[in-house]
Image 1 (cartoon, helix red, strand yellow):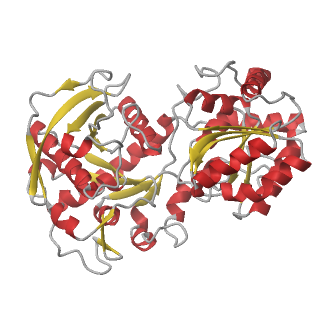
Image 2 (tube, rainbow, N blue to C red):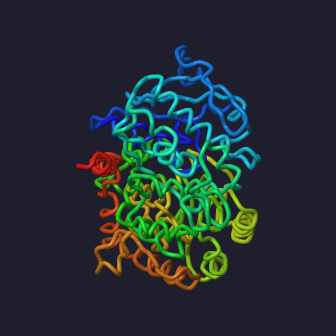
Image 3 (cartoon, rainbow, N blue to C red):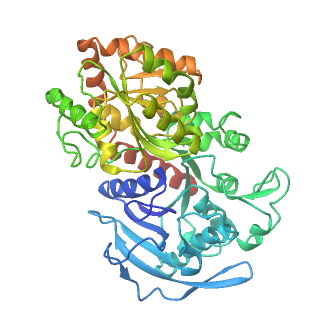
Length: 487
């Protein structure tokens, strides 16, 4: 199976969110299953070519791409994902990609990713490399299925090539003025109210990709159902329902080389379920780092998150003060984002300095310390396509409390709902009262050591490896390829 993997970000080169983690892990897992994978992404100004051992591809110089009325050229740098045979091709066009950040609010944001997608096809043509499948990710590469049908259909190189579009977060859709259709090199015949290109008067990259992709996937089974509803579909629920027979949910995996308590290089004390007592050394070190008193019998709650409205901290705001006043508990927080949530957690730390520790910002080591040292992990997201931290928490024996949505619903099974066979705690109604009641349920069981240890065991025995997810992707690849070829 030859796979062209197109993405706008990828660990370890550029990251703003979960897409980068998927892009850095899934291709490697696919290669281990025997796939030949080539990954394509922009060469942003923030990517140091020497640090990543990238090589300038002399056979791919000054390749022209026309976007609207302008033609720009690109070069290509080449490398491999670390410890992997996966080839990575970086599209080097300073005009579009030498910006302060990965994504921008610049007027030509549409052009930046139109250029990327054409550039990928140009490279495939230069190498005469015919992928069995092009795997597109989010709106930044979602026009590639359209191009395969409307722009590059003449090239027999791609006559057997199928397409898969993965939606990592339906909220980001690439909506631009209708003039972007011309920039993209497409005709206006499919731009009309309710048409394949149109959404509320805009040219929607994501909608066009959904219409033309051979198959569509998203990053958890529950999220695949949710985005077909008005509540979660962000105005695309109708077209997703129309394509429901081609829509699949595959849970993301996690990098268990980096995230596993038995071999985590960041935490003070490694441990596994057989040596779970050692987890307390991480709790002690974590609380000392935040200047909080260690007490094995007082539950410590952890948060590692972007501090945004999506993450459900508005549910915690009305109840945290009452929890801290009336119940013995501690809270450690790592994250940054909206000012209202940063101020809220800073207020909590100032008001309850012996109970709450807060670090506003990003700190990789501290994220690992919280996962290893906390007793419970709070993740009350309003919506969560997949989520990674709840999976880290389960593996680390740090029992998660989550809102039952998206990937959280697929990974965290409520102890009470599952007849005492759950691995964490979840609540249905996105209300402060529901979160409050769930926290009290969890704290009550924290003081029952045998039951608590069994909850931890179920989480720590979970298999969230990318191998498991990659096998499901490979099955979907073959299904999509066979459908394309009329099998």
